[in-house]
Length: 267
Image (cartoon, rainbow, N blue to C red; front, top):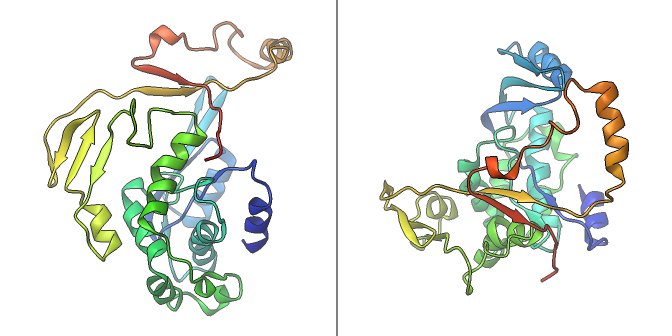
């Protein structure tokens, strides 16, 4: 983890998401069908696999991350170590690869650990002895500020994705706002917001749903060499069960479509 973070810090053109893991139940979902079959064999849990016109497929296997498991213990530590060792919070984003590492509603647990070094060390003490030589989490004193939490959860991802109307409170922003009661326990504070506003309207108040609004489908439109289409057309003809022209989804078929140019701007 240290080497990865050092490389990342030395290359300001990089961004990443943490892909953090939390102990407990999760559901692994991936297009890597053979791996899911292997995971099914390793765990003995239920396994679901689906092919879609032989173009792609997905495998689904329930999984439980255990603090007593050496591999799981290292996985848990690595996500937190990356978040703490990477210096620029504008370039690393809080995620759990939902639902693979943990469900997104468990973010408050991660936030609490990022803001409290003593809480991290308490959990490290419960890990297998063999894991301790593979991690550096207990040696890290850094504690996130509320500003940095807002950056890795909202402002940073919005800027990296070119979503200029998200992640800030300036003119033209969408007014998607969460308001919290101040609490020294970061997990409790972020788990129970006092208000959640969506598009400037109160959506949740003290845990009660007040209104619902239709969302948007956000699509990135990165620049690319148009000449690649010649190569892809040939691949489609040889390998795919549908034509190149039938593969895209027409924009008018997508409800609430918003397109971003995906141009990252360093703050």
